[in-house]
Image (tube, rainbow, N blue to C red; front, side):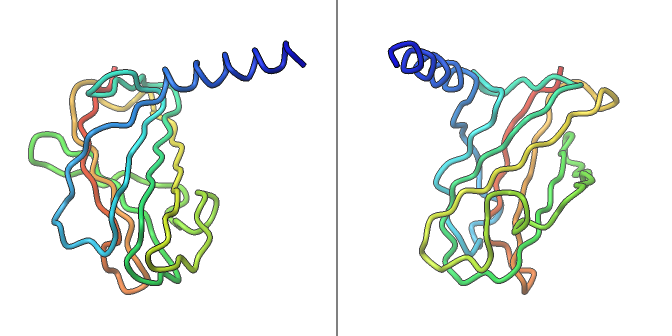
Length: 150
């Protein structure tokens, strides 16, 4: 029993070190939801340094301010002023990402997305814009974070 408690404590400490709640900017301020936090794993400082050939996980805690029956994920890598749409293998936010639609208005939810960073992805600094839109194509949440790809 003592050994398993120690193992869990070490695991939680290790996970905390590799994950960081990061700062972000809202896209327009007209979103129909409120972002509570954005965490990226692995990340231990800002901007988060993500390595090509590995996975990154983004966890967003937010509160929708409307009932959401369906939702879709959009992501863009912004190099300078040029946004480049990122191909997402599964853009349905309500399937396999911790969300179960319909989402209730005013109730906090957690969205989790894990993505492989291709070794072909360019190295350097960029901004990642991520957005979730509802059944009417309205923005529920939208945030922009600074990243470094190595």
